Image 1: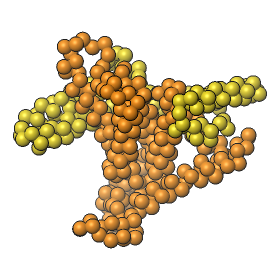
Image 2 (image 1 turned 180 degrees about the vertical axis):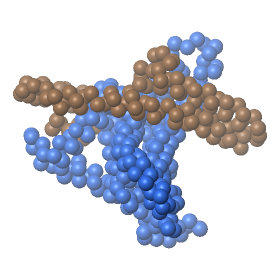
Image 3 (image 1 turned 45 degrees about the horizontal axis):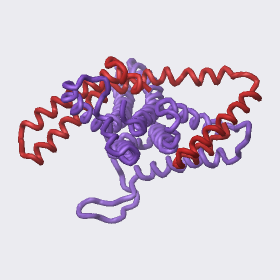
Image 4 (image 1 turned 90 degrees about the vertical axis):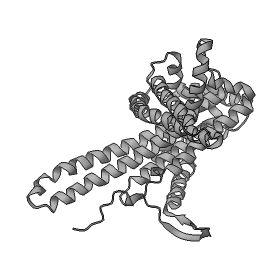
Length: 251
Length: 122
C-alpha cells in the first residue's frame, strides 16, 4: 500500500485564493487564515448570539459561554488582583481563540493553526508588547523594577539582573514554543500511531497486533483533547501572570 | 452571572469605572446569593477542577521554561556577536547565561526559590 505516510504533510499551508506575489513570496488566503476566520466566527456565535437572549436561566449555549467567561474571570482575578479586570477582554479573547483553534484542529482532516510557530509567537508578542507598553506607560522607569528581584543582597544583583532580563526575554519564547510544540507533537504522534494500525494490518500475521496501536491512538486522541483545552488554559494563565508584572512591577 | 457582558465591556475603561463596576457586581452577587437555594454540588466540582488542571499545566511548563531560557540566551548571543563583532564570546557568555536563566525559570516555576513562587504559581 503506497499511502502518503508523511506525518508532517498535515501541517502544510495550502493557498486557497492567491492574491499575487511580492518578490518570490506568494500572497494568498490560506487554509490557515480560513480556520482563523472560522474560529472568530464560532467565538462570535458563542459569545454574542448565544448570550443575546440574556435569560436568567441560561440555555445550553449561554451556560457554556458564561462558564467559560467566569472561568477566565476567576483566573485573571487570582493572578492580577482587582485592578487586572481591564485586561480581562484581552485574556478572554486569547483564551477563546487558542481554545477554538486547538479544538478545530482535533477534527479529522482539519488543520491545526496553533501548530505553527508564527501564529503562536504572534499571539505571545501581543501579550509581551501589552506588558511592556502598559508597564512603561503606567510606571515609567519604575517598570524596570521588574528586573530587580527583592530581598536579594546587593552584590548578587550583579548576576541576578542579567538573569532576570534574559528570563523576561525568554517569556514570549516559552509561551509560544509550549503551545506550538504541544499541538505539533500531539498531532504527529497521533498520525504515526494511527498509521501503525494500517501497516500492521497489511503485514499478514502481524495484523493480530494491530489493536494495540489502535487502543493507543484512541487514548492519545483523548489526551490530545485534554492538551488542547489545557494549553489554552495555560496560555491564558501565563498571560494573566505576565500582565500582573505590568500592573505591579516591583515584586 | 448575567454581569458577564457588563464586565467585558468595562475592561478598557478607567480605574474609577472598575471600582464602580466591582461594587455593582458585588451587590448583584449578594443579591443572587440570597435568592439561591444552596451552592450546587456541580458548582463545587467546577471550583475544584482548576487546581487539578493547573498542576498538570505546571508540569508542562517546566520543560519549555528551561528550553526558552537557553534559546533566548542563544538569540541574544547571536545578535550581540552580529552587532558588536565579538564573534565567539557573546554567544558563549550569553548562552551560558541563558542556561542559568533556564534553570532559574524552572526553579521559580516549581517553587524552589522562595517568595517569587507564590506569585508565579497561578
